[in-house]
Amino acid sequence: MELHGLLPGSSNYTFLVTIRNDTLQGLAVYKPQRGERPLWDFPQGSLCLREYAAYLVSAALGWGFVPPTVLREGPYGVGVVQLYVDVDPEANYFTLRQRYSHDCQRLAAFDALINNTDRKAGHCLLGSDGRIWSIDHGVTFHAQPKLRTVIWDFRGQPIPTDILADLRAFQQRLAQPKDPLVVVLGQLLSAQEMRALRHRLKTLLTRGTFPQPPDDWPSVPWPPV
Image (cartoon, rainbow, N blue to C red):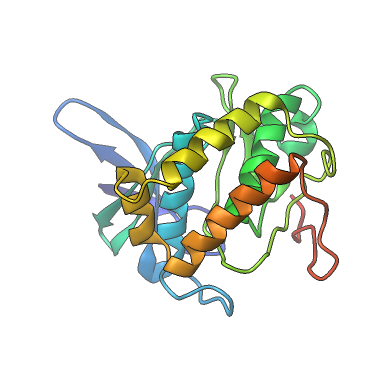
């Protein structure tokens, strides 16, 4: 791993790096655990674990909008390493939501599932490949309700049947303690957070609608972009 420098505007230490093996190389983002800013409501050193967990859940759902992500030892210790995606710098959720409405519905369901407390518009990206990508999932999976997002366009609306089908398939996997995905998630998250994840999933499937903004918690992050 070769460091190129810190990325500007990040809350935590975030490095642009080159990763390579014997035949391939590419750009990635490296967020070392020791560079995480302390937060009052999340355990110190857990943000990189949550980033990896978010990638695993996105991949398990078959939605794949979190770039490939791993935990690796780097120059500043263990951290999360995520493939760098070439994106349109002018695009964000507010410019993409009409053209990519169904993708945004998936993203809204995903955020409700992982209890994302910081879905800014700038965390929703348009890749040069024409795909929607989603980044910055460090403050997720809290056991207490903390959903805070700019994606409230679908509040109270029925969740599309294909999204519900993906959520049901994921629920079946979570019900199998020996499933490799469940084993890894159990190593990344606390037992209480795993129970809360299952509860949020059950609630989404039982109600079949997108959640409403909370009354007792700021529903939109600041800044929104």
